[in-house]
Image 1 (cartoon, rainbow, N blue to C red):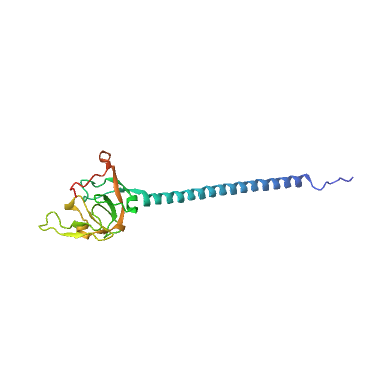
Image 2 (image 1 turned 120 degrees about the vertical axis):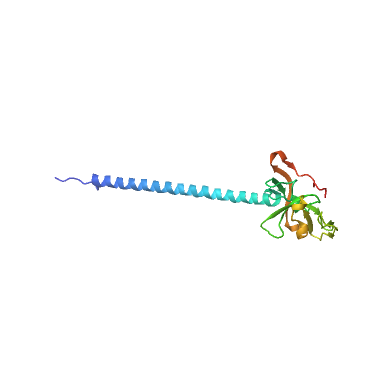
Length: 196
């Protein structure tokens, strides 16, 4: 008696189906892993893109609009006391709108990594008194072109233009306009207590 064989035995057919099913599952798993990797990579790239954009916006805001500054030292007492937090706007510097009596933040002429906070006493071409309050004779000088003369409100305890001379306009970082902290003294910065 002859038995007709139909191409495959049932065991071989079952092994082939299991093999193709395994390939399908492995392929689906790999495509799922690739999809998740692509999605994660896309989200990371989007995050980095937004971080760079917001970083650029923050840089422009700090460079051209203003910044918050924590002051330290006794040279501007009683107007600004140590650990006061002030807002320094930069528009006045860019528009060359610094006036006598303004409190400015500038780079120190001796240490560029340090900022100083002083009051503008004289602009270019002004005649200013260079002697201290206790000096017997008063001496005067003219502020050169492109410079300003700055002094602290606490003249007895301030290193300012009387020590290092007029500072170049390019060292100005901004004009201090608002005191933000402490809350009981918050508000705009007033005039010089010495009326200079």
